[in-house]
Amino acid sequence: MHKKGHIGAALLATAPVVFVVTAAGFSTLALAGAGVVVAGSMLPDLDMRLPFVTHRGPTHTVWFAGGVGVVYGVVGAVLGSGTGALATLALGAYGVLLGVVTVGAHLL
Image (cartoon, rainbow, N blue to C red; front, side):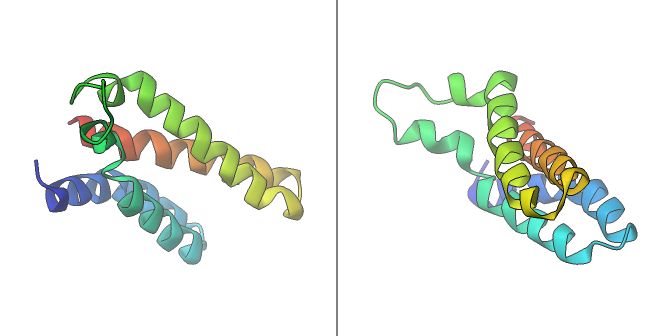
């Protein structure tokens, strides 16, 4: 699939999440999430630029999706850390979900 196809698939997979976040009254957060998804939609294809890593190898697995989810979750938690425990937990969970869905959509 080409870059535009991966971006579209990632946005399609994330649309229900963005809808729920928007409906909950966090439209700016939903828009930021969509931007994160677009930015990360080609992340698994970094293997094409890495020597000694085959295309559709380790970066095209559910383990990689989980790892990206953890990284996104940590970033989300750090961004929410100044606003209280609930926001830290919520933004961390949102980050995990965005990371897993972003890479997961690439694997479809």
